[in-house]
Length: 165
Image (cartoon, rainbow, N blue to C red):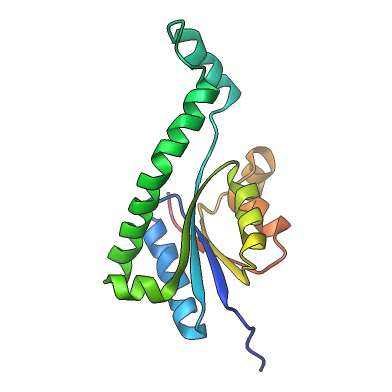
């Protein structure tokens, strides 16, 4: 049997409590195959409706929501990146494991599925390991889900780790 050559695993996380279970799968696979993990957290833009509501209540002279969002994302990226690092170190047990196993930690602004696919390509990921809420096919058809979009558009294998809501 030929074992695939997996050197880079992309682990997108929303930093929820369920993410710890998904990270443990990423860690086990990486350790078994001698791979490294790219940790990714995506900050999604505000919806048009949310922006309109916020713009409607902001006093004049205040930046619009788009400008506020960009400034906020930039200001928070460093903080979120440190939180992600702390989250991973907590799960790995110590920082030396983090340095050996984690290739990089990224916080990117954009639409989740598209950013995940883009970053998988940029890092030449051989595998994506991510969580899923396990919605039904009917709800995915109506609403769509990040995992569903990634599975159907990815050019590399995707391992989905289910968790209950």
